Length: 256
Image 1 (spheres, helix red, strand yellow):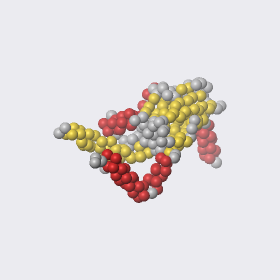
Image 2 (cartoon, rainbow, N blue to C red; image 1 turned 180 degrees about the vertical axis):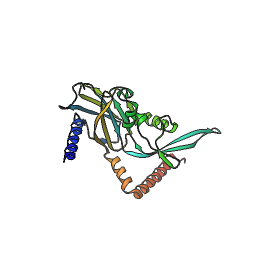
Image 3 (cartoon, rainbow, N blue to C red; image 1 turned 90 degrees about the vertical axis):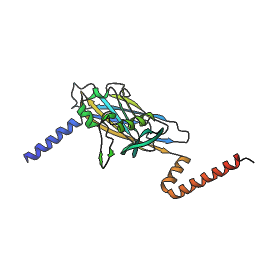
Image 4 (cartoon, rainbow, N blue to C red; image 1 turned 120 degrees about the horizontal axis):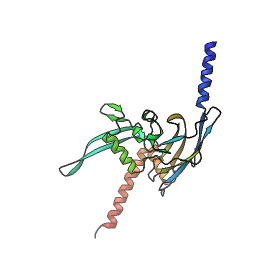
């Protein structure tokens, strides 16, 4: 009985510590629609840090790291070399189930928020995010300066699909915060997970999460659904349209 009481007391004690701060968050739009003229937009994430009676009195300043991850997919990065005046693919690396969109935002530099060990464990900053690769017959993440990993992040960053910004989170008051989530014109379709992690004095306090969805509407949605659910018919229709376009072009541009 004494052991049971001690276990219950320990659970209550740890539970109270875990509830010392609570994150309440929301996004400005939980469903983004992509139309033929969609060119991108920016969502707003806003929230607050809720304290309770167990919050230490000396805890007055917080740090936040927001991670936004799009649908996961397998991707390939290829290395090209110039051989006899021709650029050819000489090697490649496959990335397995990595985020199609990845953004990390904070209120100050990532390396100033917490220790390198906690940053690696909590995947704070692009260099610490796990991007699993197929290396020969093995599956693993690699060191940040790996040439394929660096090239993969650079190419995704150039397209606006990977990014990090250590000044994107703004504290409006000591406990109220906001940040923007930019979405490029070629944003992938699917569900996006948003994870918000709270730090204080270098220690990880807790986290919460939310989500939003990006969907196609109109003709693009019809095409996407057709390709997904009726692959054979979609392929035949595409070939027929290509043949029709070629035939019409031959008539318009033929010389008598």
